[in-house]
Image (cartoon, rainbow, N blue to C red; front, side, top):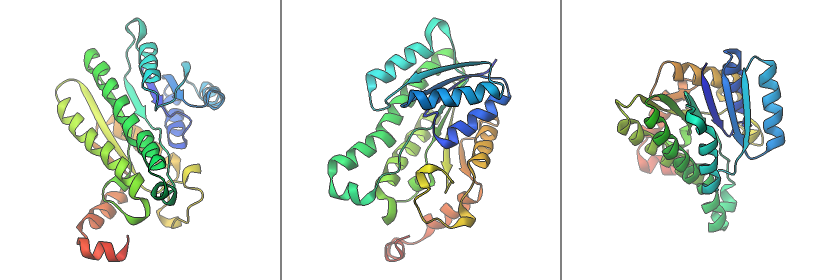
Length: 246
């Protein structure tokens, strides 16, 4: 039976991935900040076919809590086949500009905590000699933009770390997937005025993620056209890019 750990399990994309894995009758370990929401997700997954479900409360910014989670998940020689790291938040750029503490807090949640978690997971999976670590980053990390500089910087750090970790783990039996969604219809983006044609459903993104994990892809742009969009954005000369405020 496939055993899957999902961190940030109440997020929209993560919960849709979990539904797909539940249909495969996987064992799923859910971790997140809100236990009542986790339990609601677990009840939904049980109805969809998940065989074993465990919920763990977790503040991702608490390194001691991270260690306790890992001890519980890997207790008694248990292994993890897939670990999906899906937590994160979309900061208010104006608030970050106005207060360095706010900016630092968001960076900790979106980057530092993720890197710490993935580092620990990498050591655990390397010791067991198998498994996949799938990390949700963002297309925002491909190039710094005026509208989301703080969020983009955090996601750039995550993506770069995953690139290096994937190379380091090559040949170990452990695979690292960097997931770069574009615009997705979730509560996190509900307040934004996004172009409808570029906004994907979480169901589609979840299917892409599960397929990429199965195929052991290195990097996933989802939906696929974001790979081409970001390729074009990276080619824009810096003076023009600054003037356009893309």
